[in-house]
Image 1 (cartoon, helix red, strand yellow):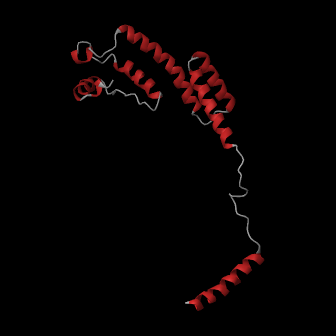
Image 2 (cartoon, helix red, strand yellow; image 1 turned 180 degrees about the horizontal axis):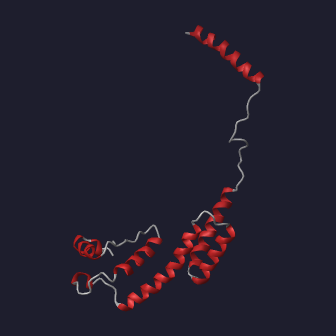
Image 3 (cartoon, rainbow, N blue to C red; image 1 turned 45 degrees about the vertical axis):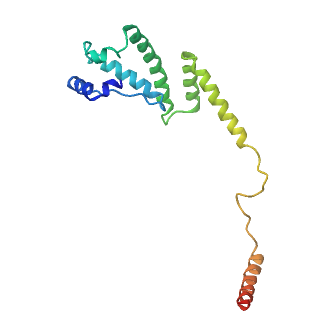
Length: 163
């Protein structure tokens, strides 16, 4: 897909279709799905006798593997999109993740590690504070406030006399 974004290849592709190739972003796994989906959309427009691309195009066996990968990733992509909607409750989210783990047991390793990290972080945050009421300082009484203000007035004059 990266080779299809060069100037000459993009110009050849632009003559045939308005679709543009998508690149994979390492920080977003969904970009792998969009890149594969776009590859299969663009595959019919890519010239088979183009020598520059012939070396980098996948073989028919690799295309079959990519197609099965795309089908598996479409399941994961649909679950990911459904988990992001607003009207989803906790039971539905659990059902979606359980269904995804039935289809793709390899995701279990990632989710279990993630869940353990979350629970460990929550246990670390639950440690009680050794200091009492640091978040809010209790107010002083009116009598003490009056004492401080008169002491300030008295000491102000005393300090002025020292100069």
